[in-house]
Image 1 (spheres, rainbow, N blue to C red):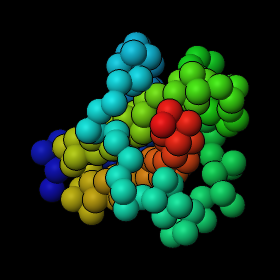
Image 2 (tube, one colour):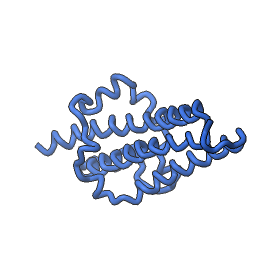
Image 3 (cartoon, rainbow, N blue to C red):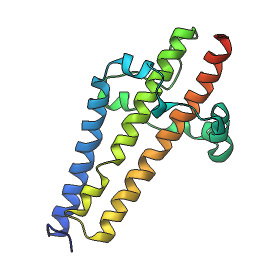
Length: 161
């Protein structure tokens, strides 16, 4: 039994409103962070050797076949850096694109964080469904950002040598 017991219709309405709020709040929060925050190399967003410059994501998940179907948040918020295509091919353009993949990845990781709050007004089984939703909704976006950044990092590292 959740700490807050509500009729089913109210629980569903609150779930929908809460997810919309959390997704938009986290997105706006991350958009407010300066680009310089994401241009810096950070342990949080480093590309790991095992990712093989993004190739592992293609091999396991066949990213190229479905990544174009994901909706870019900039379309919804009408703000931000659209990542459907490169905005240029210079090293600086690629570094900005990589930084924006860090911003997007951070947005999607942070969008998972509020999921345990849903146990407050949902039955335990529904709370677990909310956690599953949070992971399953955000994971494809995280995988695409890591895939793209791995490829970009390989290009920028090879040209800076």
